[in-house]
Length: 328
Image 1: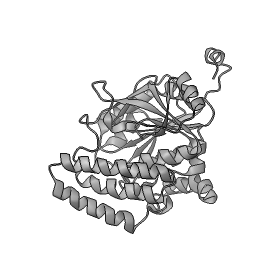
Image 2: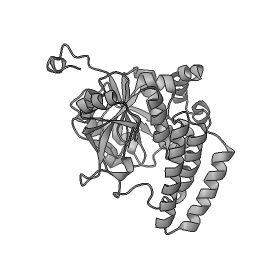
Image 3: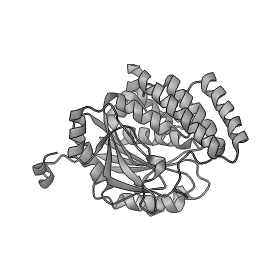
Image 4: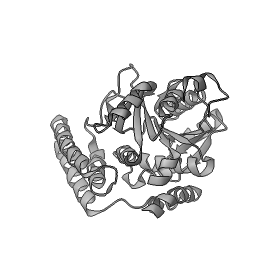
């Protein structure tokens, strides 16, 4: 978008954007997130809330707060991976947007967060853009640190810098703007991951056919209980970290062989730090063994199989992934 187009509303083409929020048992934060979405300076075409079978009244409260919200109530908890897969599928199948803006229910966007993402992404070949994620005290959140792209060409670095952005190789689901066309070509998030590494796998796969940007001018607040990384005593979730990381390295098309070698090394170092800092090392060792067995002894199932019992949601998933399946 040129400066003259920014100043002339009639000359600017406004892209259609559907926000997707995955919610689970955090009604107050969900209401705050919806309020922040309603206050965005850039218009939203629609808002899809995926209620991941909450035990509280999150779904009812969301509908009362914003009746126009499209509420998708799942009959079972599909994890963050399944929630984002279904939400993105519903957004594309029912609204055919240019972009989907995904986030958790504890993500609170500032007023210009979407506008900044769209402005930065308005250039050729950009298929992903991510926000600066801060905690409640304003410091950068270590859980959502983007990975810069070490292979970016000089022209890519220059084009990104002109928009106040940085080329990246992966992004977090905590405020990710993703091209709907790219999702159709490369597929949805893999629901069988359930939690952890799903956004890393998805974003790296999207970026094998396009460019991604970290946009620090777009700011969201990630209201986690503590300012900590996932390395901090993950408990039983360490099983998903191990299994999913093996799945990613063995089966995903997101990383090339050189990148996989680098990430395997960094992953092993990260696991070592996790064990050293943990107070339940024996338990983590059990989860490590379980994860290794599951990672090498199985592979991710197709989304159509994982989400086969969700009625219209299943139909949306199959419809959206059909082009990618045919290409594969």
